Length: 453
Image 1 (cartoon, helix red, strand yellow):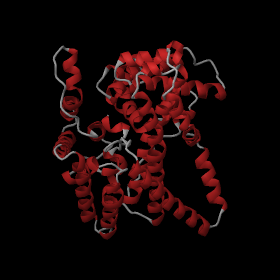
Image 2 (tube, rainbow, N blue to C red; image 1 turned 120 degrees about the horizontal axis):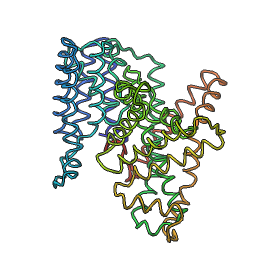
Image 3 (tube, one colour; image 1 turned 45 degrees about the vertical axis):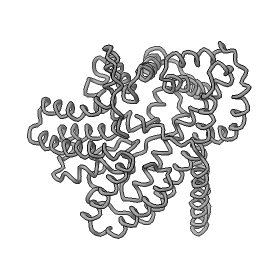
Image 4 (cartoon, rainbow, N blue to C red; image 1 turned 180 degrees about the vertical axis):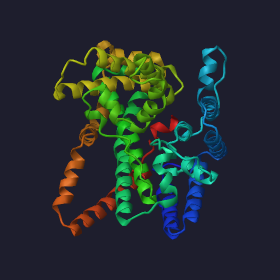
């Protein structure tokens, strides 16, 4: 089930919120209802693989108890291997078979398996470190793993951040209102902005790349650059909003990454939960900045690429950022570049990286690079009009990817009386819900890009 489906918006979510209110004073019943709803949410799209998630959750509960009884590296290592086994089989078996020359396409990958596997690993590691208590109740741990707001595409939530809220969460009127507003803002990002530019990009790339000119190629990649941001950050906004409505406070996952002044700054702002996971559970345990720093960075960025997909293009995408970060660290550390230059340069470097991310066929990726840098012969007879039609949306995306809209909203809200704020927020909810519903009903292009990771 997708957040942008009418079934979710008008049936599943209202029922879930009503039940959460009905049982608000009964913690056990409230958790039981939320667990059942979360499993139903996942089973809606993965009727078989929901059993895998349940089994993995129960295994992680038992492993957590084992680690709690005997905190040794061997027990932790075995636990991590057992937890990673399903992910490796479903996501990487076909890729690994291809490397050794065996023809095996691999099974269909369960949606969200990368996210909930990493959440389980963080739980096991925190129990080993003593920063989290082993959960004695298997259903509570299953609730942590299966919570539907962030189950499919993150953010990656750590057990220590929601442990208290599983048994002691409260939803105030202000929290609920903020959650509704945040959810609808994310839905608008996804349905109105990401799907619009993504639909044009998909239509253009349905034709041979040879028909693109350099300007058309840059235009297409600009569409994808904004699509993947508003798609993924929109989903994170919806997850955070849903969490607030249900009493869970998730950490921010994006912080305007396209205004970054460097690649390092970009990765402090983009998919923050993933970056912090690799930092805390791979980079620092390997030695971090203390020893073998360059090798540690190489491992982390190769792993970052592989996490996103089982393909050479994803590995190269990760290594691309490893090279950029290495260059910044060792070649650019004494050079001060003003923001009016560093921001657009960083943006272009990130956009060039998205070429590797999008094209799984390396031949197509190289062809796109060639066209972007003047090696194409296309005239954009087909792409030109489509890209021109989406320019107003691209302008909105450019402004929307900066802090400006939030600052303007905060100034307006702080300058008007309470009754006017209520009217504005109510109008926003109605207009955004109606606009998104109209887009969902009339649109045919609505994938969540990070579901496949």
